[in-house]
Length: 436
Image (cartoon, rainbow, N blue to C red):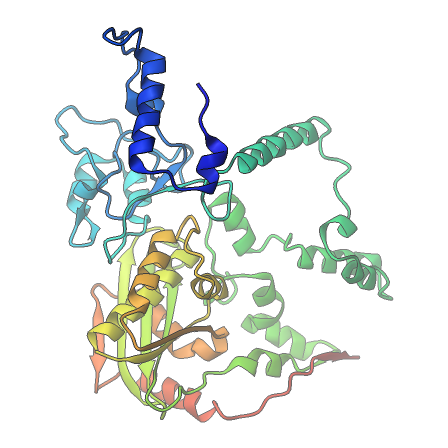
């Protein structure tokens, strides 16, 4: 039985025609004549089931026990064995008032599933559940992606047999000009190799360890304040800065480079909303901070919220932006500018790339809420320019309930906002060079 796949890839067929095609397929499998029907050994739903994993929107179409919807697990299904007394069927039965029902989760599911479910983002605008195909960026199934995935698996198996000793060259992986400049530097080979590892992000910092294993804390063990990235470890950690000051080197422009993206006041009539997310040392508590200011740098409102759950920075940064949008809409602001220090999320919002696996539903909510404002923009700012929101997020980690400020603000937050506004008009040098 052949399907008109080429025609279907070019045109949207009428529903009546699709129904006729489905009827012909059913007749092929089960029909033995005009008035005779064969035994239905397999249901039509199973034979026509779509491939791919499911992502929770409103949860109304996702089967709790059968569908793949738990992100971060081996097969993306719940590990809990269904209790015969449990009448729960669809995921929407686990949701109450837009959040996961903690009481139901604790009663029917094992602790591991409870943590994974609570880390699954939910829609606040009623987005529909969706299928996700993990082998394409757009999350849509294509024959080419299946072929590419099969070839990649085959190549991986072949490399495993060869033990992967040969590897690929820098020339194959990056622009040859970059590597040519690295390998021709007049320094010891071990330093060149260190630079190569830095550029390939192959140093064992907490960020990379957590990305590859899903275990351990993301925070720097030295300062305990920020995610331990390669840049943070080498330049921005307090201990690293002290080391640079003591070293017989002068790195002109490093401080200016870091401060090059300070907080800038919005245009008159626009409210700037900065948001950030912070994690406890054991990654079990999450704090979200949202700070709003006008063109004069004055604090308008501030919100702080904490949650007890395991999650990922990218997810919570997107949640923080969405929370800021929700608060701005409730305040009836018309012209708003949202800022975050998570460049990856901001880029996906501006490119309207809402198919990313972990935060697809959140990005769809943000896209839906964007039309609520007359003017709405999203921009990236470095951590140094997101200090107020970052401090508030760290403060929120220890909270037991959501806190909101208006008119009266904590003294430390007010002083931080004033300092950022005073330093917002300073000019900085963009040069960066090393002097011996």
